[in-house]
Image (cartoon, rainbow, N blue to C red; front, side, top):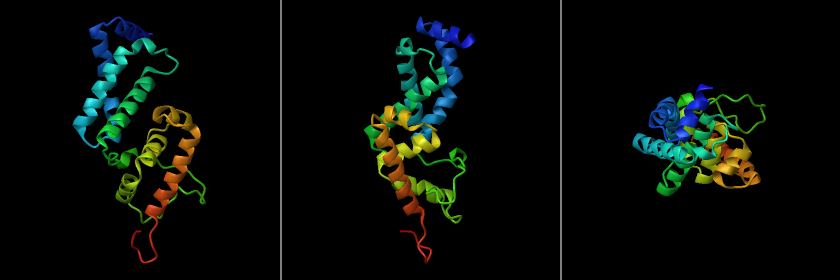
Length: 183
């Protein structure tokens, strides 16, 4: 009930409740923005803009999902909008953010053991934006294709296709030639 009370107070422009909600979520939302943006100041700006939007659109929040999930979607959208407007590269991934995925041996996500985390970072950064965004949202943020399609304003089929093509391109970039040099 506590969370619902704070949100209701925020809807009535109670500044103390807004500050309390901000303090509760700002660090987590900063981490989400930082995954997409290289610059810490840009991530802070995006988080601030996301909170402003959240507070102005709070009447649209229907509690169908948790407030944190609703706010996270705003932060992700703001981050992607910022990247598009600045035409910046996606952030360097931190090793902590990469997940180990159990996959069958014939799955295209598997790479040679000699591949380093820096190799993966560079490979993702070198992909076209449309593949980067889908890979980040799918692998790092854990969104499904329906959510990705809504965030990027593309069809679910396009999301699946871009993930598949991005996976193939990423695999190609991470494949070592026989003499040990990269493509």
